[in-house]
Image (cartoon, rainbow, N blue to C red; front, side):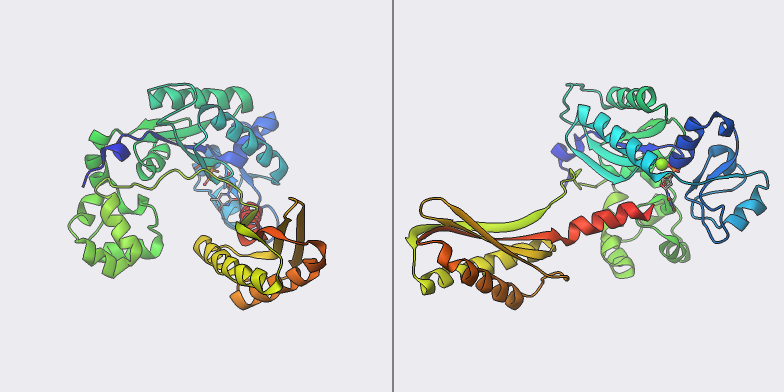
Amino acid sequence: MRNLQIENRKIIHIDMDAFFASVEQRDNPDLRGKPIAVGGGGKRGVTTTASYEARKFGVGSAMPGYKVRELCPQIIFVPPRFEVYKEVSIKIREIFARYTDLIEPLSFDEAFLDVTENKVNEPIATDLAMRIKNDIKNETQLSCSAGVSYCKFIAKIASDMNKPDGLTVIKPSQAIVFLEQLEVKKFFGVGKVTERKMEAMGIHTGADLKKYSKLDLAQKFGKTGSFFYDIVRGIDNRPVKAERVRKSLGIEQTLENDLEEHHEIIEVLDKIIEGFYARLLKADNFGRTITLKLKNKDFKTITRSRSEDYYIMQKDKIREIAYQLLEQAFNDFDALRLIGLTASKLQSEEEEDGQISLF
Ligand code: TTP
Ligand code: MG
């Protein structure tokens, strides 16, 4: 079924051109116009990326140094300066935020923007993409490429089509033909293994992929199989998810009557533990710290926390900690009007750090 609301979305995907290498060439004029690789100069190092001049020789990301020298003997290896890339990354996000709050960063140098509604009331997404490109160029002296379409999948493919300094628009009316002609290896989630499997099935392009039923594809490729079935038909309803770095996750409840008796409080606390645990499960996110929050009848707030060096994922453990925290606080209030439980030092925060340190 076609969903007009979704097809009317305007999504821009922005990706910086040869990001680390361009920053190095920007900051050191001696490197401009030359084949350079960032990282990979050491004995065991691999490159992070290469300048466009080096790419002509086949040099690319994640390549061992010896291989790079083989392909391009005149290569200049430059050590990475992550703090500078981080600064640029923050700067481009600031620029995006001038136009929309719906920004989903995919990495340091790449993000989706939903500009259906935007802060400058620009109805033409292509013009908005041009403005963003200009801002980035003016304020960072770096170029990026943009893809504009009605869904994430096509916008992302589009941004890669005319690199560097590209701006590619795929309208809904062009999508079907575009996808039919597209090589399947360009599809999201098609890695080398899937590509070989598809080749064996005679699937080289979107049009080939279309010959298979949803069931066939689901059987062959699992969940991604049904995703392929949809996207090759131009159906990709995934929203642009604005990043919010969650610091804590919890619930609290204001009680109908102020409670004083231990057994009454335990009864409510048990219910809160149930709700709290369900919330953590649903978010698939657990914390290393649990905090019990209590509010006295005179609105005085009391908190007690306990931290572990592991993620507290078991309900029994949560209950044990919650009970213990209640005992610790029991003499500090006379009648309770609110009880809450919060998890912090969450897995998601640390994953985020992990992702950044990947580069
Ligand atoms: P990409 O956007 O994949 O690459 P790029 O910006 O260098 O080039 P393109 O013009 O094709 O977009 O990655 C962004 C940065 O992330 C890249 O400059 C270096 C870093 N990176 C790594 O450190 N390791 C990797 O394996 C890849 C792919 C990227
Ligand atoms: Mg890039």
